[in-house]
Length: 396
Length: 225
Image (cartoon, rainbow over the protein chains, first blue to last red):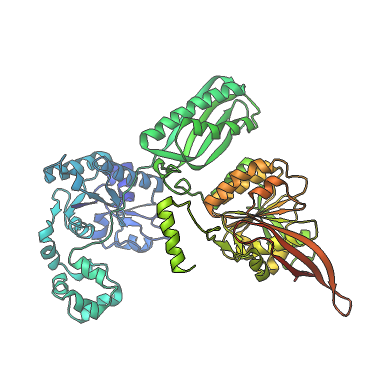
């Protein structure tokens, strides 16, 4: 079973978290009333006065003169979106962000053992979101993403709607065809034929539907029967793996620096191992006492996890770095994280189960031996007939 | 091969193992050089994939022209690299053969170590053909690098061409699957006295994939088209 969670637009939630007094009042986001621009989203109170998304702000003010206008706080919105998905991720890793902002999907199948009573689970989810973003969501449960989304649209904060698999067809039958993702032509065609509800659509046989509307429209027919072939694309929380060490007193000895870097590499390696990840780039930040910080990057051909391999990449960069003052802090940050298991033993598969892109290979060579090692040539036909003018060499 | 002979070989291989009678040279995938005469000369229809081909001969014998033309042809199919030790690559020449310069990576190493590391990394990353243009003086230590290089090229199915300005050392000759030796035989003039081109003799000195010893003559046109 799939559960669809619907909350108001994340930018609205962010605005409410910033100013709780705006709850329950008409609020329009997208810009100030006098600005040129359009409405990104509006609270339910503003919508009841006729404001819709995409309307110009000027027009929105005429519809809702007492509304509060605010620009969208992108950072806060991203935080709310992240918080929503992270809260759901605590229940199950089978979480996906929906296409509509503020909408998310969960697969409930693996939660049956821990939450045998589905009603309790839905209450727990609702409570967790209330704690995290101070919003009680509308929840729909059904056998597919499409049906659960429709159920959530018809649910309210305290009353989830659950559609059991055997009821799906009957549940959809009474709904208008507008709930289906129809293009204009197909909608017009269906209306001309007098097919205004999904039930009328379901009454047509599949071969007849295909004959009449073509192969492409069969997806719509399947949705009308409650079959949604889309896969739930799992969302993964962002991972930041970093190890840092203040150096007190400041260090100006390369031996000591290597020793500390090795210890940090072991910390990073332990974090990577615990999450089954490998890194393909380590960013080394060296904070100098009375000079600007140095940032050096070590790239790897494949996802590296062990401390030894990490340090093999870090050490030559440290020794080559042009350090001009004693160091106050050293930080290692793992970037380009990938699952560590992609690297297979060479005995089992051809090569080592892993391929580096040419752009990565070139970047690694240039980092190791200088940017002028690998170049590309360009012939300029309009230049003077001298080789130096006609051929332009530039780092690849 | 007739069916009866094939059956006999299969019976022997079943009884005595796969090392019993087998074809002298297993079929090898090839990349065309862009010159039909040269493809015929190799005996397999082009440069062998995953192996090293050596183009040896004195300066001015046309081997670099040939290698650059092969690179131009290969660049139309996919990424290629030219390891340019003596800095002699001419992109305008490649352009005349409709090379895709956006597919060409030119590596200009300062030492043999840098050059060989570049070949290994690029071969692994999926470059189709790599031409190593080696100067006469900078080849010390190449024999130690070649085994690693060939292993990588074979794994990555990358064609390696080595252009060498003199007769190659024994180690390089050992690792090469195909050795073409070039000699300049004559300048060719038209009746009106204009230079038509350079006549080049090419000999297959070694060939692990087809019978060696084939010879061919062709004219490298001047000025180069």
